[in-house]
Image 1 (cartoon, rainbow, N blue to C red):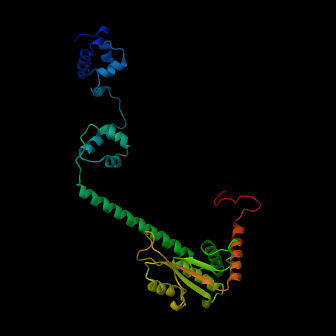
Image 2 (tube, one colour; image 1 turned 180 degrees about the vertical axis):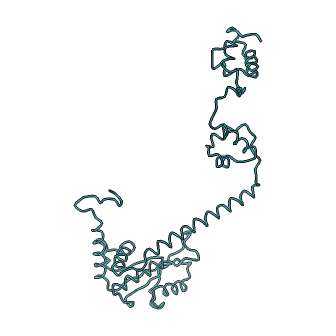
Length: 294
């Protein structure tokens, strides 16, 4: 084969044919460059574009075995994720190794894929709900019985978060609590019992939407509180002006429980709360040390 001269750079196609022929004979890039007198690496790259290097010129690579295995697995129809799980390499490496291979045909029809996806979501929700229930149940057993002092503090904090408060612009020194959670109402009533509030001092008022079954809800809250149905005050009924998700079968409305003649008790509750707040306040303008800090 005749050698090329610098003046033949203009004959790109002819030079490329020679370069490819030499490459297929097994010559290295350096040998081809010297044989064709091509000193421009960019030109050499263009001449050899698409022609793989001879096997003997390739440097040993620690991932050669994984590359070959990746190609085998891809030809067997495995996805990138499945190949990654087996070989523990990045998806970008897998893509570079197998991108020239045809994409495997889908294993499942659309209906089968959706069915598998739904089954996976169902299993995930089951595991999530089981974990949530286990964690909640474990935390519940950590509490056990409350002492009178603990109930006093819990009730005072609960009231100050959810109960009616006195304002400078609206004097309301009356213990009144409203909530939709029956368990919250029961805890509130246990707290009132600790404070010596007798049942005849309780005044219950339903706050419900117009679509609710007033008779049924009155019966429900009567059982929760122990207050007779005929002792409930006139309910507060709200018109249905919006679509809300909290008015399904589990809807119970809200119950307001007030204590008559409770101005003195209200001032005590405010004092208990202020005592807890003072304990939590920084001492001598020094910020408290975060839990676990050295």
